[in-house]
Length: 161
Image (spheres, one colour):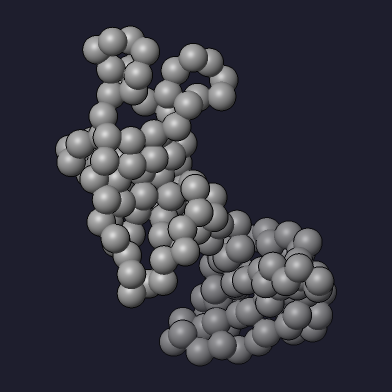
């Protein structure tokens, strides 16, 4: 499904197989895997659906059950949760931290991966108890942050590992 609507022209649609509000579009589609139906939830401005799931057959056991307000709101909630979990997983993959107790106090060591398509890298940082950054170096995106690697970096006076 493609639309040529600008942000100013969002049209609310409430049809049996297509519902749209200012953020989400729900479209009932033929399930390619079997004889049933599926529903695709697409966030405005995105090319791919955030969620595709099975959809209920209607009473005639041939056509899909029509979309309604309750179903649309449930689908929006579910699709939003899927996006939120995906964002949390991505954040956890790109940002790691751990704390070390050192002779000079507690230090938080952070690894922030920058997923550049041509030249991915990571920034390894150390922050003291007051929240002040005391060191930062650029490392390969493949750098593995562990208690051992963080301790070695701190013991080596924050020189590039």
